[in-house]
Image (cartoon, rainbow, N blue to C red; front, side, top):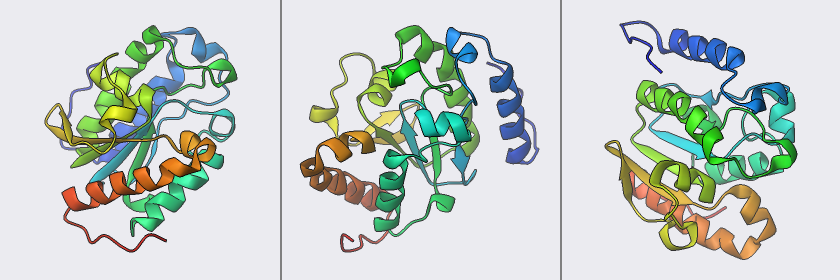
Length: 198
């Protein structure tokens, strides 16, 4: 996807991306979704969270991470001493897969240019990949969240720290301690203070 970047407010570019995604017919998800979910947050964020795909609540509201997983993500962000307004939150897919199934490889391939555009526009210092699918989308099928969570990786010159998806943490509360260690690494990379876990 080519959108020539000139000196214009970032909001203009995000609105252009939203219009393009609303018209997108690259795959069948365009015909089963209620609302595309582009992303939201600070367009100058130092930190960008990337999840898998919209769920039911996200599809209904057109906003990322607003269901139970989103509520947990918000608490994680707050425990880091930040707010949702200070970060940017997006997904690999912009449309909900039916029944919340895993995205198909072709769907990921179709949506990645939109995510790459967001990354180029926002230029975060760190990407936090939430879960296995986000990791596979950027690093390929050899990616393993259990082996690679918390590690410092690089993608297109941007620091990347993978961690567990909030939905996984809701099902496996013991992994929350590991996820918090991952978030502490994120804060360290951003040279931000590490608050006591809340």
